[in-house]
Image 1 (cartoon, rainbow, N blue to C red):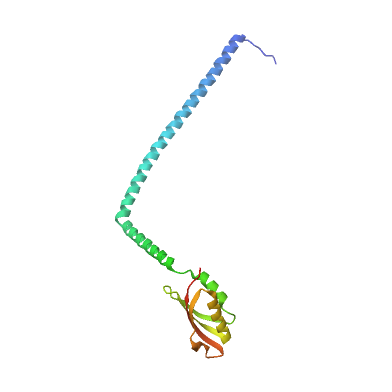
Image 2: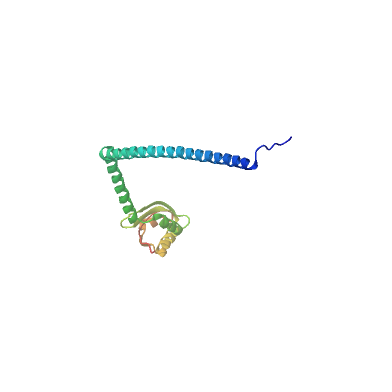
Length: 181
């Protein structure tokens, strides 16, 4: 195929510049058009968001008013009542001995064969009452010695009636809990 070059080089160069300029103008126009469209969308969204925010704030204010006047006031009173009860409970619990550690230590003092059937403590005086069964007198005597040697218990009292039988003893012990640590 034969290539014909009928335009002079200067004219060709001018035509090429004109086409490039026209392309650049079109690109600028499309960019400006896109920028205007984006600006319009953003402005519209901004307007909608501001309007929705105002509605939400109005709803929030009316909800606060309703909450304060009707059921909300009752709810506030109930919440205050429950908070007071919880605070009272925490105050009472602070005055109580933590018995789990005490019972774990106590269990180590009970000789084999001794069965504890009742364990009670007075929270104010820390007096403990125990009831149980011992297979022999020696087991019961060893139990009393273990309690005396431990140091956490004082005024250990076992009624003489607990020692009347030689075997299968039903016993009762009264003592004071005086933790050493």
